[in-house]
Length: 206
Image (cartoon, rainbow, N blue to C red; front, top):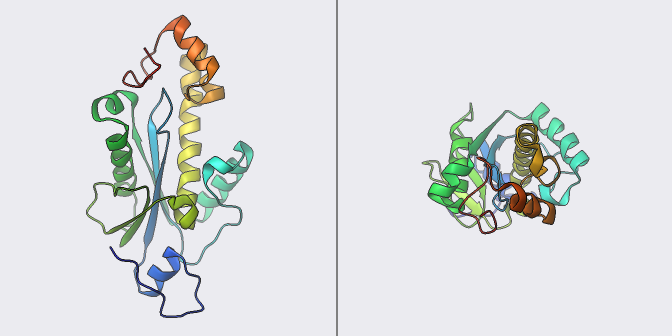
C-alpha cells in the first residue's frame, strides 16, 4: 500500500495523520516482542487508539526502563479503543522458525481486535498474513506512535509470561533475563538442560 502525502501541508507528517486525513479509520498498530530469547513465546500486540491521541513518553519499548514501560502500558490501555495479543509458544517457534512465528503472532493480535481496522501499521520488513491492507515499516516503533505503543504492550505482556514461567522453573532465572541468552541463563542451561519452554532450535539451548 502506497503512503499518500497529506492534503494539509501543516498536518504532522506521520503515518497515522496521513491515513486519518484520507478517511482511513480505525487504524491499528502491531508489533512483537521476544524474537531473540532462548526461551518463552513471541508475543505481539495489536492496538487501536482514538484518532489524534498521542501519549507522552511512548517510544520503542527497548529504550524504556521497566518501570516506565509499566506506567505507559497503563496509560495506553486506559485510552485504547481496542487491543489484543497474539502468543506463539516455543514449540511452535521450533516448528515454524522465529520469522514465521512472529508474523503469526501479529496476525493473531490483529484478528483478536474487537474493531476491524481499515489499515494496519506493522513493524518490520514483512507484513503479517492478514487480509487487511498493511503498511509495514522498518523500525516502525520509531516511525509510528501506534506501533511504538503496541510494542510497549507486547513487551509488558511477554515479561509477565516469563515471570509466571519463573514460578514453575525457578532454576533458570526467567524473572531476571526474561529468557534472553545471558551468561547466567547459559550457565543454568549447562547445569539443568532445557525445559519445555526453551526454544530447542535456537543456538545455545542444547
